[in-house]
Length: 306
Image 1: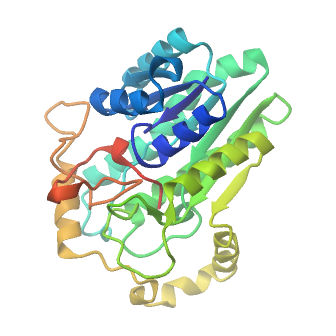
Image 2: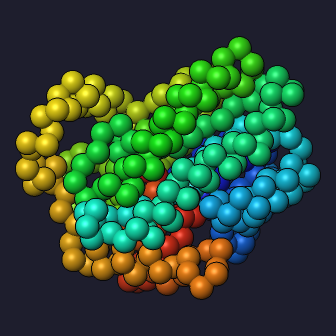
């Protein structure tokens, strides 16, 4: 059984579609049960898998959801940590609460899910964990501090995890997509208006996930040429502080920052999930945007990281 977090839309749904096409049964986790039910129905209904609603930033909710899926479909053979949230704005513009929420979803959600299923995988001597990070976790840019820091954390976690699991029969893969075309917003949390690099379809990222599992590949960039960009940036990292932010082509608008500020209030009032009527900076991991001008802080609306 393959579990996909953030599995109701975007990259998560594309992963589920390709997994089912290969004969796998999938367990989908996302915040909204109605979206999960619609996705599972499109995949073929209960013969294709099961769903469980949870906020991945809430450890108890997530563990309960994973336990329910295991009870319905059997042990987790593959875990795809895909749920995520975007944020846009400079470090002086984005509130600390937004940094906390994005880190809780993008990084701690990955840690929580892995910690829940890994003991069983080790006991059985087989399994595979896929962490969907981002090229933003390999090289950062102005206006991306909140989002990029979470993806750097996922990269470091994945590297350590892979080293620790060597020889256990449990594989680890890290997927680093660039901009992903999901029809709404850029994954970093701001409208994507650049003509280059072009967005890739969610199906291409999903294909990279499937290929990484089948071929036991550790790190995959989508598209592959991003690997070279990361190497170059690492070689000249000391010079980056001398580069004007405009060179990166990323200048979050006042609207982006305003929405980041509004989104920071989402998890308040003792709620375990953010307000559905706001979103952090507009975005898409994470595909947070919705048509008709609606705004969401929903990590399950993601289309792909970066």
